[in-house]
Image (cartoon, rainbow, N blue to C red):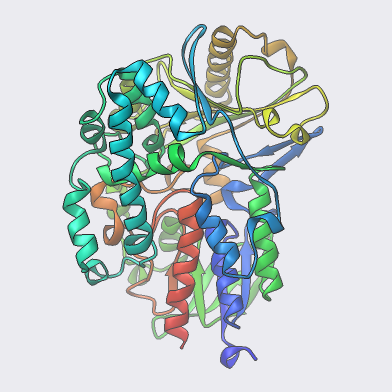
Amino acid sequence: MRPKNKKVIVIGAGFSGLSAAAFLSRQGYTVEVHEKNNEVGGRAKVLSEDGFVFDMGPSWYWMPGVAERFFNSFGKTASDFYELKKISPSFRMFFGKDDYWDVPSEPEEIQELFEKTEPGASGKFKEFMKEAGAKYETAMKEIIYHPGLSWTEYLNWPLFKGMWRYSLFTSFRSHIKKYFRHPRLLSLMEFPVLFLGASPDKIPALYSLLNYSGLMQGTWYPMGGMHKLVGAMREIAEANGASIHRGSEVDAFSMRDHAITHCSTSGRSLECDAVVASADYHHIEQKLLEKPFRRYSEKYWEKRTMAPSCLIFFLGVSKRIKNIQHHNLFFDHDIDKHINEIYNRPQWPTEPLFYASCPTKTDPSVAPDGCENLFLLMPVAPGLNDDSPEVREKYFQLLISRMEKLTGEEILPHIIYKKSYSISDFMADHHAYKGNAYGLANTLLQTGILKPSMRSSKVRNLFYAGQLTVPGPGVPTSIISGEIAANEVKKFLN
């Protein structure tokens, strides 16, 4: 029997929305998920054209324990839904023509790479990872599953002790330089934080836990594509009773006594007892709530440090491409120059770094026989105005020409499918504030309780989940965010 027939509306069917829906429906609440787009997954939706199957969003499967914990909560494992394969090598880093590293998937081999590059770095690597692993365990046990509503959540001795032991108030860059000197080792260790939304000198050293996940736990891939995770989460939510409505955008609230009584979508008025907004936080507050019910002003949002947006190209190639791996980082230009043009002097980059994913190296099923599935991504500053076809084409030619030069492979004449996606698309499809792709930056002043709150202070039954609230951007953290939001709704409704 459902608890007093309580009904929860979840806005958005991305990772956090599906997670919240699964946990809430398991508790017996009547749960409706309303997704504005015609497919579930949020940024992790799928594009299928001419035999090519493209993951349109996340392509790195890190922190596999988080997804496994989600499945275990429902008596399942990831293997019930898809085959999870460890990628080896984890990724390739290009530094120039015929000059690259294949970063191994096993820690012992990574240590050897470090030692060859910088004598003594093997020992430093083990020392670094021992501390990073401790941060990871502390974060999982003491930080990441908290709702971030009060400082008292963090008042425990292990966490207090760890704040000093784990260099919370030191910048990530300063922390890395305590261990390594070689520029390539620094680039390797810094690259995971580039998508956290600030330069390495602004990100807290706490986030070396990402190095631990990426280099010690490895890089994984769900065979069939990242959308297999989306499909599995949807299946669990629906199996527990949640209903998912696609092409159904919540565009207005009806209020009484500082609570939402009805959500309007597609001309219908839906009664509800609570709302979980896993759509863009800024959009919900500034567009769906009247001013007296907004916790944060437009000025507040303008002052937030956003994670980057990006320019993406989905390419179908009618040949197999040699000299690349599944994941490829093109670091043949100055990393600090690109960082500066994203975070400090926002502009379209002059000599961008970029990332290329070629999942057909692991999974031939995502392209026709003899073809390659190619995904190019260039990080850019959020909020740039000139997201025109001409600008996109300029960068497409730049990225392809550099890729051809560095790999020694002819690619351009063999492209038989091409689609671009950037700032204006993130805004149109996801109401993304400033067209951001990754949410709110994880700077020290935007960590934990200093993020936009998961619970509205002016609307009693409105809760938030996703990459603009706790724990932060990324697939694992979004899954966690949905679980935390569901727990907060349960407290409210009970």
